[in-house]
Length: 214
Image (cartoon, rainbow, N blue to C red; front, side, top):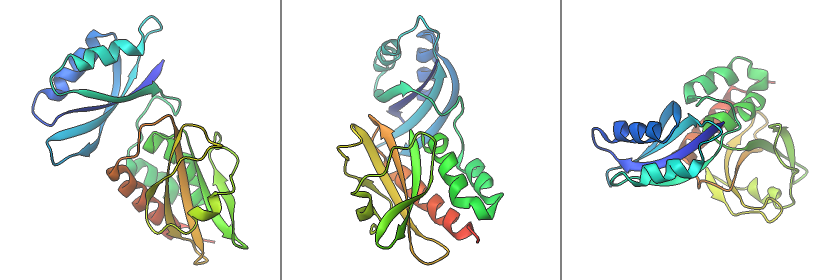
């Protein structure tokens, strides 16, 4: 079973090796590790994609991590986007291959690139939000979505009651018609979106909108 672990650890030599050793000792098979954020206080946030055999419980990984000095587990969950961590460059290459479908392709790659459960792109039609592209697991649109068309930068959105326990973020861009375009992403249960993730999302949405052609 694939799991995604988000963990904070000291940004010092040897800390990542100690983490990998602890996770391996708990029965995990590490597939990939990606740095999500480096903080000014000397802490680094990593996403770790790993495989667990059926007899190993996720709690065992949390226990193993917390036995290390300065290590904190932010979040662990089943990972349904496939057994890989897609780098930003790979995502850009995919949505620039076909400029006519750049936004659609971006929405397709966001879940695996940003470890979200879903993504959707919204466009303004007669003052209302309309979905122009969505990933296969995206929920039905809610009325409050029209308010998101007015955001001016990538940001965390307040939770929506209809999407229970889903952490939301969105980023705006200008589409080829000059009208509002917003990409919304969701994670069921967390983790919260970091400032570095919002910056990456904003950059990628803007780039896809600029690439998109008629």
